[in-house]
Amino acid sequence: MLKQIISSIKTYFPAEEVRAHCDGPCGVYDPSSARIAAEAVVSMTKKILELEPPAGSDAQATAAYNNTISRYIQIKEEQAQIAKDELLILWTDYFKPTHLEQYPDLHDTFWKAAKLCSACKVEVSQQHASELMEAIEKIHNMFWATKKRDISWYKAS
Image: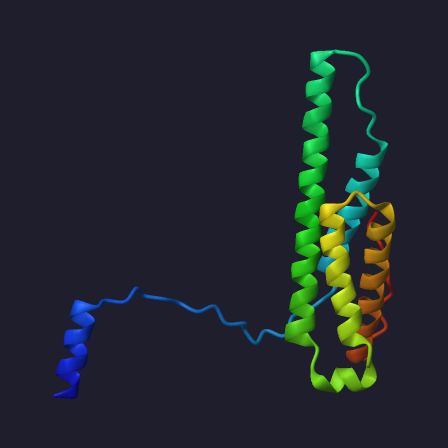
């Protein structure tokens, strides 16, 4: 009887099929993806600040400038979001309460790094881009120490 009632309800009130994404237990984590994205933020910020707007009323030069600056901005913002996403994955999926004992400032470090990613998206600040790299270096050191591995910090650029 109950099955018939449920079946009737499903017929009259069909629900969309939904799927949930769950994190796979692969255990593959590495802060290098956040570092690479942050390096792109540093590079694009530098390029934006160095780009000279054209003088005069040369339409071709103005169009080229606008095209270049908009591409630099898009890349900077996209890479800042990637860095933020990668950091949040490390923070929420890898680090456990036992790591807090080892690093009491872990939450504050990640929170500030995520905030720097946001600042890099809305501003053109070489200082914030550099601070983001410093925060990711700190996270890199914390991460590899929890794995008891000595992985040197390096930058690709």
